[in-house]
Image 1 (cartoon, rainbow, N blue to C red):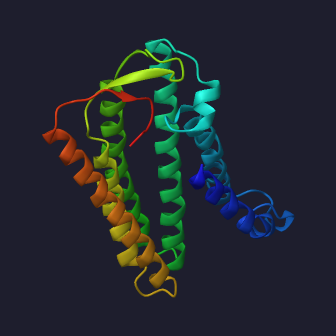
Image 2: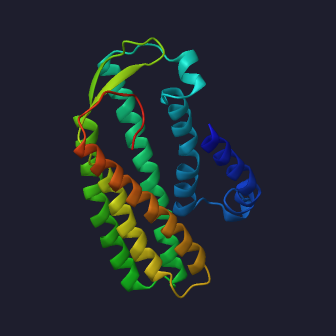
Length: 218
């Protein structure tokens, strides 16, 4: 719930600028970057609703979640997972295009960033596919939970490692721009989060498997 409040607060803070820059009639017709921005900006609203509904510790789950058939649970979980990953990829696409623009649309970056971006995210989608397909679901014994995840491959952290590799390349590219300090801070926080995820999954592999309730994605 707290992360949802912060998300909405951030959206309200940036909405005036968004209306002026993205939705302004001066910028018609819409450009590709505007379309990508709008999709990746508002897709998290759908993700947030899904997380609140499926989160195991939220009041919304206790009040509204009903027992779900394992197959239905798999479909819902897959939709949420792919929407989440798509949102991350689109966000990275916007940041990559921003880096490209800051460097004056240099042809070397046009080729290099494109190859690097595709080279990072094609394996990322494959890893996500393996993770989603490996999840095992059973009917929930408790009425307040929709379904139970018995477990699966703990490989989703690889997507975050790939993201950090892409971000490292982007940060290095932006090192001579005025926004470098902010970019470096964001990268440092993301890197710490990735290290935490890697350590978490490494610890899980050393322990006996346990039953977990639907969600989270990570």
